[in-house]
Length: 109
Image 1 (cartoon, rainbow, N blue to C red):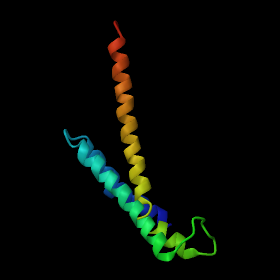
Image 2: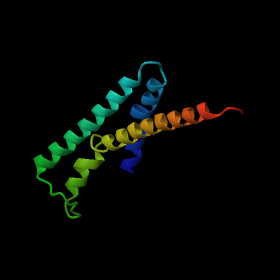
Image 3: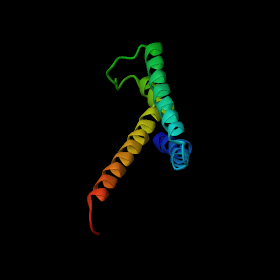
Image 4: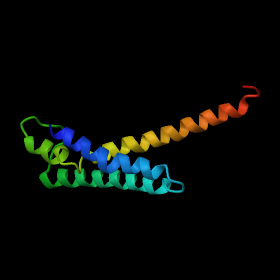
């Protein structure tokens, strides 16, 4: 049940503040830089732990410490979560731009 605890922490401390700050005017850069820093920090953590314990690139079932060190602690999967939020922001902005472009072409409603 560790993943439920991680997901609730990510929801509370990453997604909700990101959405709240994103909707404020001129704060888009803050959210994008925060999420980018989380992705980079997660990549560095995974790289550091992998080099420290000399893990292989394949997940070994007999080696429980690999999964525990990389994914049970919230530092590892937080990057994937932040990347998902980052891509959803880009998709939201893209869909808004497409819908605005289509509205400009209409002559009558």
